[in-house]
Length: 384
Image (cartoon, rainbow, N blue to C red):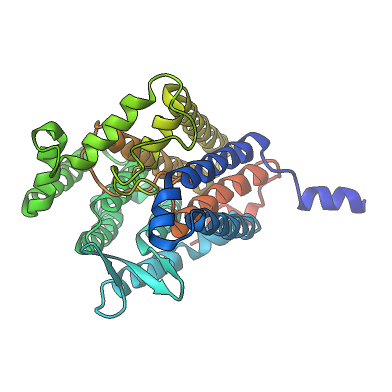
């Protein structure tokens, strides 16, 4: 009886989902180690400076994921508004003079001793948790009334405004796209959706043309070779990295573009260095890993939906939208498919906050998969 009780309390993880997340973490560690060696040696007199920090970030992120895995989804349902409020406070704090840290004209980080916290990453997770709870509780209002649909839209607009003040256009796009994707999946009236989506797109276009540097990025994206040593420099160097990789790559550690040709080689453009060193084959493996991970998360979400656990389903769909959106944008920017914008590659790019949030969101999905193996308590169906 005791063994049976323990097995019910600690059921095994979804092996495929856990292994896919672990595989991406390993790829990230290898990619960061290779891409940052020369940069770390030049700036910190230690070739393994970023590798050691990334290992520490992974340890913290996995620990955070373990903690999140212990939290039942019903707790997230009850406290969604609190996480949203916490994210809002952090987004306001990062904008206060003397509180937020300014890097290259962007005030996106909160210094915490030797580390920094990026509130925009936490905001993505908080938005998913809040919207999943709202769409579960207010399903009828969202589908049948303008007021029920507009409340989450106003919340998203407030977050988007704070993110744009930083400015963080990439995070704004991901938060807005995830929110609209979830509301569409919740069955909102198509007319409501089209009107608000159209206004949002028009607002984003206006924001692009309101800042000269965003217009410059757009023009550089359409023809980077017109100014290969100026506005098109990053994209040109990234495309050179892809070209050098060919089919099988130049070999791990043998990248030329990471030798101070490609800026941000271990952060925003780590996929370019990976493609140069491992070629089309290595780049394809990473893409397939993301496709498998996102597909598995959607599968868990579908199972939750069929079991009438709408909150759990929306959590899964939201996590899948965040991961797929960021992966698509990051790899699209690196390959010249999209204009340049600073977004991390989930589980791979260098950055502690991103790793912690990614592992936490994956842990939420793993927890949901665990709970789907157990009968649902009647009291957990609706929380007002």
